[in-house]
Image 1 (tube, rainbow, N blue to C red):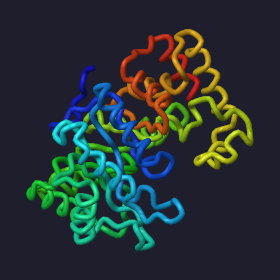
Image 2: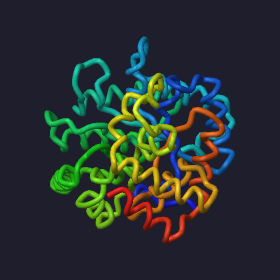
Image 3: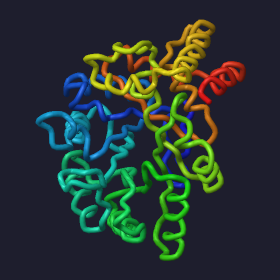
Image 4: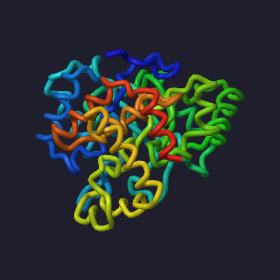
Length: 316
């Protein structure tokens, strides 16, 4: 499997990243361990998580995903230096708002390190824009953590092209490190949050892009095709937002490629993202070994130009 350089970070990652939001939520500890073992055994090397995962679950407070990853690391199935851990800071962890202030980040990183059971984080991202905190203050915190060896590289999530460009100017003016990775939402259905100015900027500035929601919260697996199909599912409440003419056209295109190739819809949807200009690797989640197989396969196949064009046209 060919690894891909992650912008200017010095890190190289496999073409699919495991989304750890499911750990401690829809995948219990035992299942999470089995999935991670199989993922790394297949040659993949990167896990994405966040301090806030999975605070939305009743009785949770955040940190559950990081804690499970830390326990898995301690089992020693894979050596720490063979694992690239991506985690994020800044989401509401009880303050009632996002926060990227320096003192908050310096405390939050210690909590993440403790839960992960490691002394460094490979890639640390600001999770959401914080309109109350200047980029200079956030970047100053990240610079200090890099100097201390607690993080290796920095990035951001959910910034627009304009916001990312503004952060670059702040870094240049102050001599602080810039964001070298971004994590936008991007899939066959949701195109506008990456394509256009943000994608152009990332390509021009050699920014690593690890996109999330490659399967549109499960819609692109093909399991949800009519109102009510998502009832009782963890993310089922989101499905009605995709069940429109464009969403059904995307599913029809996926069905055609599936019939031609014998691949699952999930594999095709993830492989499409992985092949798009500017993308380093998509993030996808799995809660069973069969779902994981679709993820693993996506990093091993190359869709034809004809199939890519068919899918491209369906999602616009």
